[in-house]
Image (cartoon, rainbow over the protein chains, first blue to last red):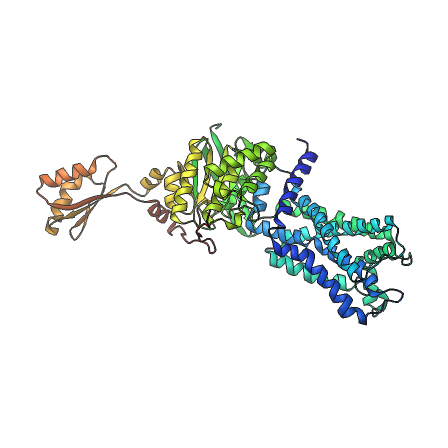
Length: 258
Length: 327
């Protein structure tokens, strides 16, 4: 069997495994549904009144950002799942089988895409209920924004794969994810406009890929001025994938059960 | 050496400054069970990881089923099965789904994977639990499922890394019978264990490792013979007969027998039929005996004699057997 068709078949078998477990682990379902909903409600109704977004309703400004943040973190289940597989010895079993050497990871990252689609449905439902509207967006622009967001989620799945493979336990993966990556989303235009931040933080936020990507999604969905480069957002996602996918695969080949 | 399914020569592996293997050699004949015996940290698991292509050795060579573990790693993976001390099953999948998944990853195809899964669930007495998630299984059931997963592709060489650690005695016995069945079916098994009775029962040959080296090798009987043969213990009715008993048994003994009150300990020359002979001799000398027994050295005696310490018998925490939920 050629190595490509082996990889595709093995990826399918393992992706099925990843998806089968979702309805059997209700806590994961909560991460995909309740958590983003909480964020939307928290920001729209608790903080929203105090945040100025000139020219927009805050909910319109917020939804693209919160979608970017939630989907970036959608891959978190990959970090948890992989660190658990390492800890329990399943990675040893997979590595001793005559299967593709990257399928465990490609299966994780591709099942994340499906789970992120589920998250998007929930987020849009809550967003529309809270008053979100697309502004002067064509169907093509809406679709391109969705593709961008899912691509971002895919890139972050590889980052989380690497974190999962380096963590000795799901708890460690959890704390690495939340102490390193979570603050990055706050020091960006995900929740508030970067222009409103003090010097230093503002420059950091403007260079932050979360800003680039949130603003790109806003320009597509809210028709904001085109100073934000949509193509640059795609470049960011491609670069992150190109860096972290090979690192994760290399780590997978070496990782030992603890 | 084509009769050997596993051949290991000069294997070395260090983790930083810790030398896990310091030049290890051993071989397992096709269709036999080789027991790798040693305390925790002796290097057993490192050896298994190298032989199953999970880890590369720093030096030395290893061939399994005629294939080099490093150069032919990809081809070798189709010919081995691994069951480890972790019971590596996906707890969120059912027993059936676990085995089907492993079959698919061996590229057996969907139908054959499913057929094989049902067959193995049946022979491992898991049919009733086939459609329950593995997280509801008892420790013994998980181990059986793990071993079943190692057998999905009928690999000619099996690696079992401490397959019974943490199991209750009844589950251990069941596991032993299962392993014996597979060997009867022609598989070669490398079994690591820190349980001497397990090696004694299952292994055709035993390699004793300690601190990354092979310190003894042979059949269970050969290892026991290395530290001395059998010993006859005679309990006399009258402790005053001890000297007379020692001299009448003298020609059967390797060394002079010793007396401990009414009990005479006689280190025997290797031979058969010692009890009737001893009884005849003592009878002829008019010495009345209360009891007589033959003491064979255990592998525990061997281990202590070889290493100066007992094999570690402690059971890792969190591995206690649970009663299975209603099947």
